[in-house]
Each structure stands twice: as C-alpha cells, then as structure tokens.
Length: 209
Ligand code: URA
Image (cartoon, rainbow, N blue to C red; front, top):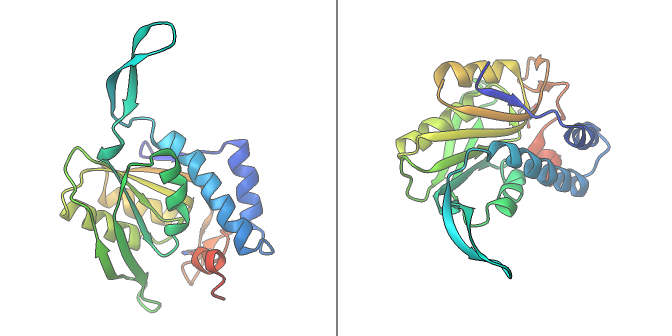
C-alpha cells in the first residue's frame, strides 16, 4: 500500500516496546510518545515546502533553504492526539494548530464530534492529523472530512500504532491521504482495541483509569 509508511527504526521499536508495557507510568509514557512523534515527524515532513534564503556565513554569502512552517497546520484529535502535539511542534515551531474533539460512541463505535477550532486552511497548507491509535479509522475519517471541509487538501496522518482495519477504512475513503505510523499491529478486538496495542492511549497519558 503506497499510502502507508511504517517507520520501523530501531530507536522507535525500542521506545514503543517500553510504551506497550502495562507497567510503564504516565510520565515515561508521555515522554516516549513525544520522542517517537519527533522521530516520525522527521520522516513525515520529508516533502515540506522550502523557500530559498540568502545566508551570510563567516566566510561567504550563500543560498540556503528554510521550511515554510507557516504553511503547516497540525490537528491533534482530542484527547490522545495532544500527546503527540509537542513532538511535532518542537520540529515545526511556527505551525498553526487546529483542535478537533471526537469520541467514539461505545455502542456504535461511530465518531461523535464535540469541539472544533481550526485556523484558516488553504489548499497549499500541509496538514498533519495526529492520533496515536488508528483503530477503527472512524475518528480519523471524521477528522479528514472536517479538515477537507475547512479547505485543507494535503493531509498526512501520524499515528503511533495502526490496525489493518483502520488503515483500510481510511485509505479506501481517502486514497489521497498519506499515513505514517510507528507500528502496524495485528487486529482489533471485539471492543475495537488494537491487539497487541498498548491499551487506551488517553488513559495511559493522563492516568484516567
Ligand atoms: N484507542 C486507544 O486508545 N487504544 C486502542 O487500542 C484503540 C483505540
């Protein structure tokens, strides 16, 4: 699948194994999620637009390139996506941030939206949608629809762990979207948790259980 990039670097595998461990506490879990997001961003940002700049070194005048980070918008899906936001912002500090609150109905597993706050989006913006767990794909598809409704077109998804079911749902409805993930796990269980996964990412980030 051309849209899917699994970034299986040894450093990412190492950090993700610590995150999967049920005994890893929220402090370490948050730190590792930020670190892995930073490493994923390095790959996912490969095609960011750059502009030519003049630079005067101590030796000579030369041309350099700088990322047009004002044309980047990051959209964390609340709440677990917040755990990835600082990782992206530390590499693309002048990006705009749009927030989208979505939860999944425990009965139907459908995405229910409860908050939207976006900066103005244009077709030349590079948009990164963040959600650590790409499970059923329903929340992500909802987020993609909302981003497109607001005028965004170039969309990259970043997740920590993806399930094949979620990837298929997203790609079949959005063949234009690129997915970066640290791992592609086996499947979803009957409660739509990723197996083996790491449990509920929001609960593990914020110790809500
Ligand atoms: N959301 C999570 O936090 N974990 C899963 O396994 C699936 C969805």
